[in-house]
Each structure stands twice: as C-alpha cells, then as structure tokens.
Amino acid sequence: MRFLRRFSSSRISAAQFFARTSISPNHNSSLLAPTHFTPKSVVLLSTPQNLPFVIENAITFYQLVGMQVLVAGVDGVVPNGTRNGVSELWLDDYLTFGKSIELSKKDSTPPLRESDGIHVVGAKTHWKNIDAGLRLYFGDNSVDLSLANTAFSTNTLATLFFFQPKHLQEKTKDSNMGEMLCELTATLPNLEPQLSGPLSEDRWIRLTDEELRVTKFHGNLIKSINGKSAASFLEKSEKLMSLASKDTKVYVKLYNGDLCKKYEVIAGGGGWGAKADLLAISPEAKPQNGDRLEFFMVSPDDRYGEMTSAVVSNRIRFECIPEATSYGGEVPASQEVENLFGCGCESGFEVNEVNHRSAGEVVEFSWK
Picture (cartoon, rainbow, N blue to C red):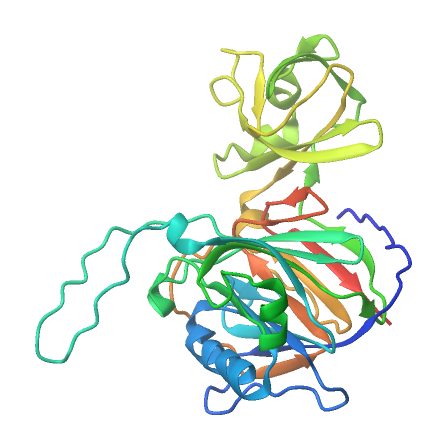
C-alpha cells in the first residue's frame, strides 16, 4: 500500500460545509439540510436506483428553497463502493459551473416510450455505454469522476444536471441549466475547515526492485529498458508468472524528474512471450528515453475482491471499485454517516491529472 500526500495552499475566504452519506436511504422521507447553517448549494451523488428519489428532492430544493443543486449518478458511494446510497455535500456558498456538454450531443437515442396501459410499447433497444464525467475543483485540487450508466433508472445513459437560483442564472446565462449533461465542470468555494491531502492507497504489488530506465521507445511503445528487451523484465518476474492468469493487471509508474504518471501495460508480445521485445502501455502515455519505471500488478483476487475499509468520518473520499458481476444482491442495512462524502467509480477517476483506474484505489481528503 502506497501513500502520497500534498497540502493545498492558503485561500482568501472560506465556506462552511456539511457532508453526509446515507446507505439504503428511506425513500418515504426527504433529504434533510443541515441546521447549524443555511446552505446555499448542495452536491448530491446518487447510485442509480436512488436517482428518482434524489431528483424529486433536488427539484424541491431548487423550486421551494431557491438553492443551487448539482446531481450526478454514480456507481457507488463511500465507503467501499456501496451500491445503494446517496452522498451529500451542503455548502453555505455557491458553486461555479464551467464547461458543460449536453447528453444529447453524445447520445442521439430517444428515451423509451412509456405505455398508456392499453397499447403495447416495444422496449427493444441496443445496450450501450457513454463516457460521462463530472470534474470537481476544490482548493488546489481537481477530481475527474466517471459516471454510472443510469438507463434503467432515468431512461438516460447518464444522469448529470444542475439547477441554480434566478439571480445566479441571470448573471451566468448558462444555457445548459436544467439540461441532462454528459460533461460538467464545477468549482467548489474554498472550504472551512480546510482540507488536507490527498492521501492515496492501492492494491498494487511491486514486481521489480532494480532501477529501470527507458532506453528505446516509440509513441506509447517501450522497446527496451536498461538496454534490454522491455518485455523480459515481466517475463522473468516470478510473482507475475506464478499466477499465470489473464485476469492479472499489470501497471507501470513512469517518472520524468519529479513528475510521476501511472499507466496500464496493455500488451507485450504474445502475452509476455518471446515474439516481441516491446511493451505497449496506455495510449495516452508518452515515455521518453531516460524516464524511470516501476512495474506493479493487481492480482485477480485483489482486482475482484470487495473493499473493506473501516468507516472513517471527516473525509471526502473517491474510490475505484470492482466491476459489478451481478445485479441486485443483498440490500445493505440503512445507515447514515455524517462528515463523509464521496463516491465509487467502476471506470476509475483522476486526481490532479493522475489516473486511478485499478480496483481498490482510493484517494481521500480529510479535515479536523
């Protein structure tokens, strides 16, 4: 388990906030705003089955209370990627919305027709996913979240929208207010108490101990390391070879000076065989001669194993959760955890432009 820590810089002004996560929330009651301050905005992250309930509450907060509201459908909520929950972040100041793209720009499929109770309505449609994401800025940090497929709960491939009160809308004239989106950037006000972090952890198992340097590359292909076949460094790894499983994932950390980027090793000859010397890493990677490397793996047990972290308060937490292998399952007992906010993403997330896309990766921010 590896930890990295960075502290954000000082700021001019700050907003109070209150975080709460509800597991298996009661749909017969409403979401409750904090009472120790009057919130002006709220961020609601919801698993798909709770979205109708959350959307109803969001409309109430907007229309009757005049609040600014941001809603996003996510795969799970913290802690441990719980598949049935709602996570709330209440603020006594407003968010600032930036770039947004309507969902219809990426998905031209019309919503399914509803039956009138008399005529039969065909529901045949081709299953598909869409890349939808929410970028949050707070302090010196940016977090990019991949959103859930919500076709079965809202009839849209993703659920992401915001409302804001009349005086803000007149000022910003944002044409996408109230529209279903596939991309949105939101900047939170500076927070009080101030957040520390981020702290990160993962399930990566180190494969190499010696110092490794890129000595030949082309694009995202690493051809040689330390003047030798790049693939050979994985072929001779006893930890990797002993598993002999195609479900094992291999990753590399690439260091250019003090800058560290993380990528997946996506190909290496015929498996890790002798047909090719090169290693292909994530398409966005740009290795350079002299870059330092470290190889890691995530075993099948770690890749598909459940997350079991203890519940800790005073956290904003993001998780890359194992892919769901079945629908339904046991419904967790109802529970509320105050001072905890965040979500789990099957496709992973990015923090400060560093990706976290292997199951079990966690990044969290804390406050006192």
